Length: 297
Length: 189
Image 1: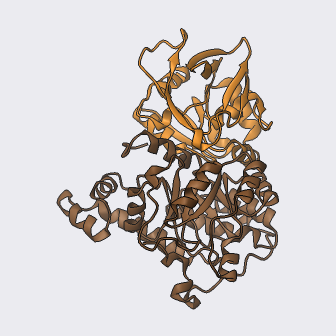
Image 2: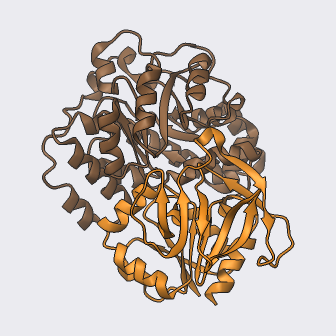
Image 3: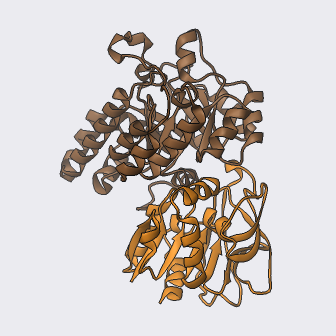
């Protein structure tokens, strides 16, 4: 890894994210799905009560999953288990840490608990992943202690357009930073609303100081490949797998496509016979308040 | 000299950076033909269940097993699990290249991941202090007389060697040191 930017604790936290690179992290709601995910080659699972598309359909307040569901999933597989806490809900995060989950997703998919502050993630031994739409948001979360960033995308939509927008925005903003002179960085930090030290780090290294994964709307092997080409180092697949006609086959195919993303022949082969993917939503028909990506800042 | 890094999944890039620092050309290995002409290979950390799955899907399982018989190979964490003859909690398929028994996630979950100073045995010649980063690490529970222990953490062997094969349960690629990579490269020459 390039120069360390924070102490040893951070090395353990980003270290686990390094181990998850080039892989697929799958949303699961029970033991059976977790086992299918592990057998299909998932590098980790996200333990949930409902997948994002169901959260979207049901409405109401979406909260942390019940501990018994998380424990059931942790007992079923040997790969890392992640779980979601509401934005700003550090008490939910404390519960997840006590349960022993391996990564906490402070997630806009759940209803935010705090409209002003995110969780102070430095206070936890368990690493956090947070969503971001752009570089400023990513660096604010890293400044709070996030050890992994993922695109927000639009979870539960089955539509990759927002994830593409966020990955591209992040990538071009990083490229731009590397072209600036050192005297320009303070103003840039002000414009981005991000800590200067992190802006300087990114300008020097040309990448985020923590791994950068894709999430939000990935539904097919081709979607995963697109995300990898746009700079994602791994992909989260939420509703896409278990809302499709043949989850087991699709899970296998997305794992295979992610590893072999530079090999279109293999991706073509594993894209065959997958049945009907999840239906998906037109992003432009979602009202602002229905967009998960608008939550958090 | 070209040294491979198995690049199906996991912490590939930190190893590539270490190799480049030592003047070695790293080669990402995803397909059998990429093994040709390599002086050695690193099997990096990641998820061992995923790697077993992908090694088979990409037709690398048997070619890699053959490669390991003749060329220096270093398994790190998940890579060490791939090389072990016996795996516990749970049992899983492996290349079975080293006579060691290894327990997966032996120290616990991520919460129990840790960093500690390593202790050199008489077979590890370098006196420099070494830091071991252990992430959901496996533990080498037992080993045959063909295996020599190079580094320990407390009483646990954390880096062992059997002929051309090395296995470490910690992550030297995540620290600033290049010592362990240098040792592996010396085996490849």
